[in-house]
Image (cartoon, rainbow, N blue to C red):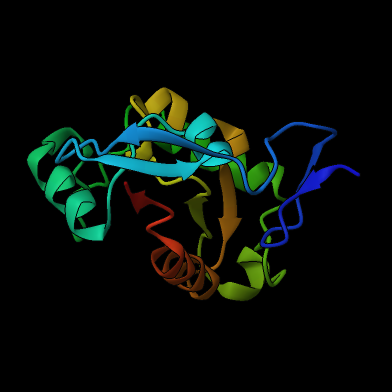
Length: 157
């Protein structure tokens, strides 16, 4: 049976990720404590954190990963606008969760990083099309809230 994401309904093909229970030991990127993370997560990201507090402290200490809102543009790298536009085009300008179109919405869809941007060593990796999905603002907020509830996926050892 192919691996799949219940959350987004994507099919990843036969054996494309480790079994759900597999875990590996690594170190928190901020405090350097030893932690255990799911193997599938370790394969897809290079930065791991003990908990939300360490993740937040690391993000604040790494200005290149800081995201600013308001009039300042999001610092997602030089290729962000192009990749976001290509993701919206690929997704038919429709939210991939609820199906609402940009036309019906009256605004441009958000583009969500399925694996958080801050988890990657470079914007080129983070902004790959396979990591991006077009969503309306409402579904985007729900996805982000779900991600915050699910994290940390880690256990201190």
